[in-house]
Image (cartoon, rainbow, N blue to C red; front, side, top):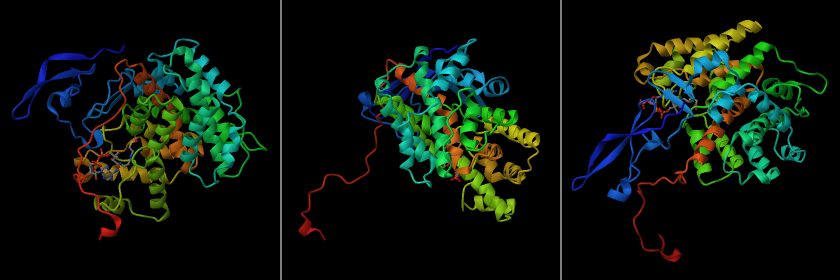
Length: 435
Ligand code: CMC
């Protein structure tokens, strides 16, 4: 159950020479301590500076807990390992958005709503024609999520998501999957396959992706389970770049579609969700060029390039998602009898890096993107679609945070300050007098 944060009787003292002020200390439910600086500027005229927000709590949140030192990740208090073993993507989506595991019937209700919303408005098909076949699917996804708002003007003013607004949640989750598959079909010049309401979430997505006009694709249970697990493990990760983006955009009271579209754009970057594409491209290059793994690691240490799928702002021992995905990757390949040459390369890279002081001293370990790409490749997902897959998984997390932010009665528009370092006031120089 969520626990309200406590304000400690002890305060932090900030000595600014001629002035000392007391700053309240806030303690979270997992004993995380924070200094509340909300009154700092009003009382002292000072602001704080924190490059990349590495020390800044932007909000209080009850959705996801991470202890990066211990490698712990919990959704609403449930360890990710337990959920991975026992739960499903839809169940976890409900948990993230509504705060509790769904009761009997509630997951079916969500699945049913998703089925109802999986078709796009017929007019939206014309939008796909406007994109070149070479368009990156993340650009298409972000544009089409925003475009969806044009077809649902009644939802633009929605400020709260409750269980009664399940349809809105389902709409986003359904549309993102259909848009993703349609953009893939467009990129390979094949006719789009319409969703099939008799199929569940993962099977339906795979059908829209891989069924041909002349033949229906049926996924094996191992593939469906691997996809479901992939989506579940990507479903939330507290205040990362894309989730913070969803919250920042949402803080201006922009609608859910606009906020989700912005989050997709933030995820696209190679330092965030785009790393899964870059990681597999790196492994493919090592394989294609017959590169020696030890030499690759040396080049990384010489700062020629980064080891994609390695390192994390928060995790400093291990990323629990990577551990689960590594095992799942092994299981999937064995079950399907696939011999992917990239897997041993990834394993060797991990082994070399795990024994190298450069990586050890900087706490650099495989992150979620290191093994996930091999799973996606095995399922048949093309590399350019990898970050789109991450977006499909992250959608319930973004929605949960947008919801939480809108429910906060003390919520304010996100508006950071800056330390200005540009020119001070200057006189205007007329064009003819400029050197
Ligand atoms: N390969 C080689 N060196 C690295 C790497 C890497 N992947 N990541 C960090 N370093 C080095 C970095 O050069 C720095 O060294 P030094 O102190 O000597 O200058 C040190 O480690 C600390 O790195 P940082 O850039 O200050 O760390 P950060 O917290 O700002 O960045 C990161 C975190 C994930 C952006 C970064 O580790 C990275 O670029 N990794 C590769 C991209 C990647 O896999 N991203 C996916 C993240 S997990 C999925 C998600 O949620 O987005």
